Image: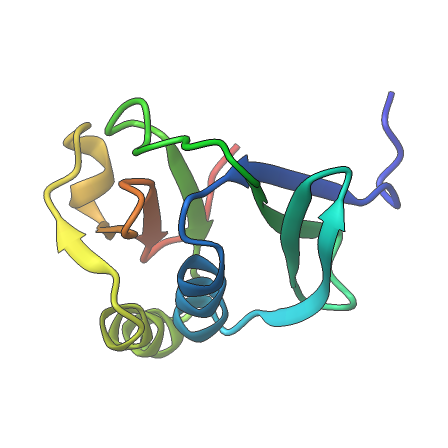
Length: 132
């Protein structure tokens, strides 16, 4: 079993490294934790919160083009228990350049909003606690 103290990093490629990094930093309130240039041909940024056990990493391999998200169901989902914080986060997402879209799966629209970044990847902000 993976211990609770393990860090998780979700990594994905992008053709728009600086723009995507800024969208997620501004939209989700993350910090730029690190970045790298020409590491074996890759540039990248690592964002998140210093004390959280998850990070996002965006990379770009020089000379390659990755295009848009493969489906409309590629999601990052965040659950909020405070309606005011949820509303504030929704406003930040719009100001950061995310576009509010209809969810591919109607379930995500019942208590949340779905946003799409300029690569076509989606973030869902759920206005309820996750129930296991």
